[in-house]
Amino acid sequence: MNFSIFGLGNVGSNVFKILNLNNKILTFSKKNRFNCLVKFNQKKYEKLFKNRNLFIELIGSINLSFEIIINCIKNNNNYITANKDLISKYFFFLFFFFNKINKNIYYEASVCGSLPIINLLNNYYSKENLFYFISILNGTCNYILTNIKNNTFLKLINLSVKKGFAEKLFEKDILGIDSVFKFSILISKTNNYYISFNLIYLESIFGISNYIRKIYFEKKHLSLYLNLNNYLFLNISLFLTKNIFFFKSKSSYNSIILNCKNSKKNIFSSLGAGGEPTASSVVSNFYQSFEKKTFFKKKCFKKKSIINKNFICLNYLIKIKFNYNLFFFLNKFKIKFIKFYFKKYLIIKIKKTFYKKILFFLYFFKKKKFFLYKLL
Image 1 (cartoon, rainbow, N blue to C red):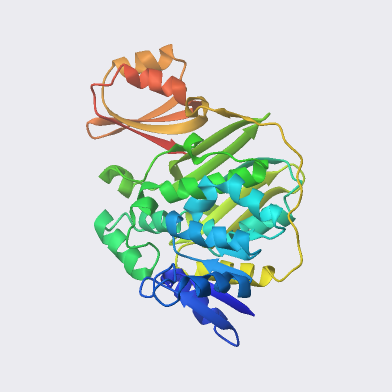
Image 2: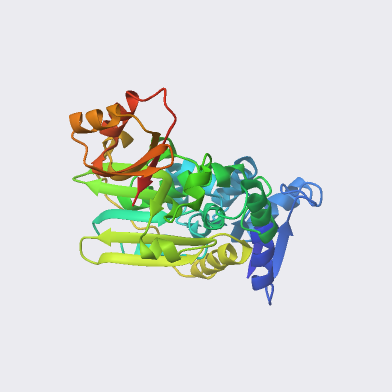
C-alpha cells in the first residue's frame, strides 16, 4: 500500500511510527516543503497523486492543505485529515466534491483525539433523535483548569506545550477557538446539515479570579448542545460543576454525555490532547479507508432555529459587594436565591433562571465590581 503523510509534527511523527512497518511511506515536512517542488519537478509531483490512492494531511494550515485536496479530487484519492479549521469552515463543499468522485474524507482526529465520536455518530446514532449533549472538547483547556489551583496560567501553558497537549501556537487552544471548530463539526454531523461556527456563543477560560481558582467546584470548559422542539441552544463557556463524571475527567481527557430518545444517556471519555491519542484516530481512519463504502445519501432536512444565549436557563453564582438594594431587585425580578457572606462580599447562588433576567438584574449594579459564573 503506497500512501503519503503531509506534516511530521507532534501527531504526524506518531502516525509515522505506528504505520512504518511494511508500508512505503512518502513524508513531507517543512524541511522538504509541503508542495514537493524542491525535491520533484512538476510532472513527478502530478504523478505522485496518480500513483498513490491515500493521503494523510496533518499540517494544520488551510492554505497548504487545499493544494493536496484539489489534487486528491482530480485523481480520485481518499483523504485523511486532523485539520479542524478546514472541516468546520468548508464542511459542505468537501463532502460534496468527495461524494461526486465516490471517495471518502476521514476526519475523526479533528474532533476528540482518541474518542471515536464521528464513527459513533455515523454508525450508531445516525437515526437517533438527540436531545442534548454536554462535552469537554479541548484537552488542553481541561489540563489547565484541572491544575489551576496551585499554578499560574503561563506555567501551565508552557507545561502543556512541553507535554505535547498544546501546539507552539497555543492561542486557538486557550481562547477556545479550537473548541468552536470541533463543536461546529459535531452539531453539523448530528443535525445532518452545516451549522457555522459563527453561530456558537463562546467564552474563553481567561479572567478566572483567585476566588474561583480555589473554590470547591470543579472548573470545566464545557460545550453545551440542547435541542428543544427544533430550537437549538449552542454554548461554550466556563462552568462550575459537582457532576461526578466531569469531576473525574481530569488532565487532558475529553468527555461527552449524550442523551437520545431510544438509547437514553450515554457517557464517553478518552484522552483528547497529545500526539499519540490523536494519531490513534488517524490510524483507525487509515484502516477504515480500505473498506468498500460509499457516502450515505441523506435527504434534505428542515433547518432548525438557533436560540440566542440570553434564553438559556441555568444556575448561577454571583459574587458582588454588599448592598441592601440587591434584595429589593432580586424580589422585583422574582429570582429565587440562596445568600451567604464572604468578607465584604455577598455570594448569591441563584436557582434556575434565564440568563436574560440575570443581565437585567446586574444592569442596576453595573458600576460595582461583580463576578458571574454558571453552575452545572
